[in-house]
Image (cartoon, rainbow, N blue to C red; front, side, top):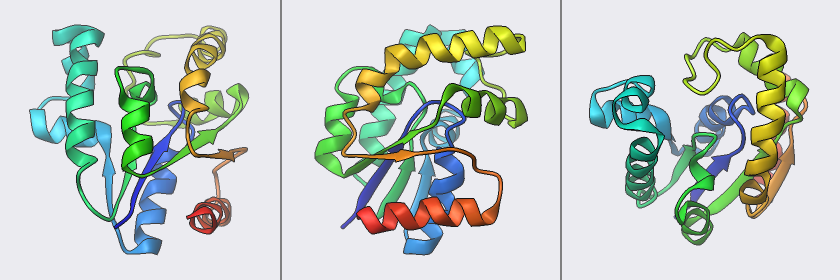
Length: 173
């Protein structure tokens, strides 16, 4: 039985790599944010607006524990998931954790290209976005660095780059 938790800042490539990894390993893939949206029939920005960040984080923890009981799964966690409650120790005790460690400039590029509405960065200029990433990444690093494995992420643009990262993860499992 295998459980893999992919953690890291938004835009690090958790969902992109997670889908390919799950396919390669013949396992189920869950994006925690999508799972929450499906279970609560609401988009994440709407949950944030209605319940605030604290309310969202409580839901997120509950759903993490729910999917964390599934067997043979790859789980892509939200960028903030490891930073609240006992989430990091729970993931470490339930499976293998991988921190996708991308530098701020790469994160900014990935987030600019992204099509997803992300409540925490909505409406920021490029300069504001970069400074927000740098500040919040510093706060989150102590949590991310508790992962059992760390992968240095430079860019994820081509199928070849994705395949390379997926092979690295499989090699560590």
